[in-house]
Image (cartoon, rainbow, N blue to C red; front, side, top):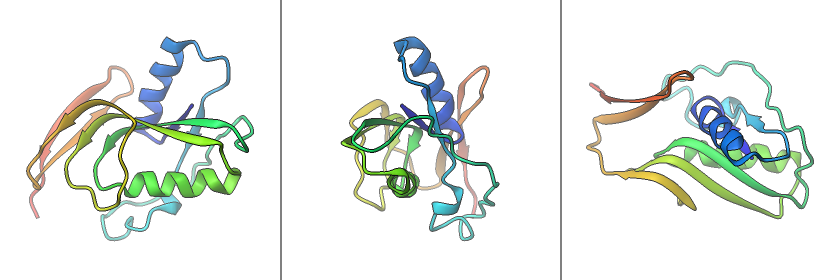
Length: 138
């Protein structure tokens, strides 16, 4: 199991603990793999990813908090493949919302939401975890 920094790691930590998985949890920081961080105002922090297991020929459960445009997932896949070629990847997300720009679909979804373009949902945490709805004014 691999969580995407930051919210995906929080969700993955909870799932990993509840499922009592024997392998350690991996963490991806995909900031430098994003193709939109300068345009969206994101500023990448230099924190390393941690994959404490061999990726090659292994099935990976990739966990994120919110699936929106698909750009985070594309970046995460690019980084995972830098470590090796997995046998398969299952995408698990807490929230799936409308607005996809890239053709990614989660295999497991906690909640699907239809939101107006000016609305955003964010996972806040890590303790306690909570969802926050925001209106974005451009």
